Length: 398
Ligand code: ADP
Image (cartoon, rainbow, N blue to C red; front, side, top):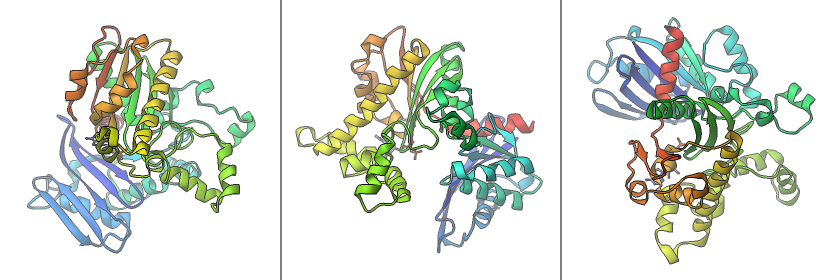
């Protein structure tokens, strides 16, 4: 069986075709600048193709390019579209309606539209991706895999904000959490590595967007992102945890209105805002390597980033009554030995002891044990959200 995994953004569609007999990705790529004057198709299949200046005025045209590439006589990987058994769509927020993946039908579509208000930046694009596939492949089963589903096991005292309870009930304002497919994948990898299900794991998914979770016995009991992905860690351009009163203060003391403040907190803050240099961790690391000559704001951005991760490790270890395993994943988590070192430094009291050599030589794409302690292990584990989506899709359509 072959499963097509779709991750649709407002101006891009990332895709992978996975052969589920061996979980091998047989084609992947992305459509970029969808809806703009000229768009791009990137395709890696039998051979690598890049089509620039093509017309993808909507997600439907973009999906047609993807499907044409998959069945192309020269570089395609399947003979016709009937070989695609199902399509798994990443959907950012299912709200409280869904605690797991679902086969998409009219009721699900209605719920997705109803949840747009809770995820206005992400859900509309995910819906466009689904509508486009439904139009072109009307008889192929589709599954929605929600980013928040894995975190639906959080207890109420962890997911609630201390606002008036009636307002939570009426407006559904609560912590939902995101990156759920990644956190679930990592927790299953830890189960596989340790050979047991009763683990207390702290997962740090550190990419441009970053979140942490506390996973006890395979279930997420807390996570750092909230109602939206803005909460929690310092991210590439997001501020993470901040006093809500700062919003009114910014409205009153700058020329930004409340909408602009929200955009500012999402797009102009975080590593970018503190360093004044870049939201990209590689640029900050390059600066950091200059030692005494390092730009002080770049150093501060790295220190703030690591301090916040460390604080969550402590918080989640307390929430779970201990920790067996700390996992780093995502672009920064898998690549940055500096971040791992700075986070673990001083956590010997929890049982985390850095193996400097293993940490410095960890390679992206490979699992690495980077601590020496016997009781508590620190791992770098490459995440694979697409495989998780493909697995869930297969499970539901079988
Ligand atoms: P996204 O959240 O967009 O999926 P990724 O998980 O790919 O992002 O992570 C992107 C982040 O990873 C960027 O900040 C990037 O600078 C950082 N990154 C990628 N490679 C390295 C590296 N070799 N060293 C440090 N940071 C890296």
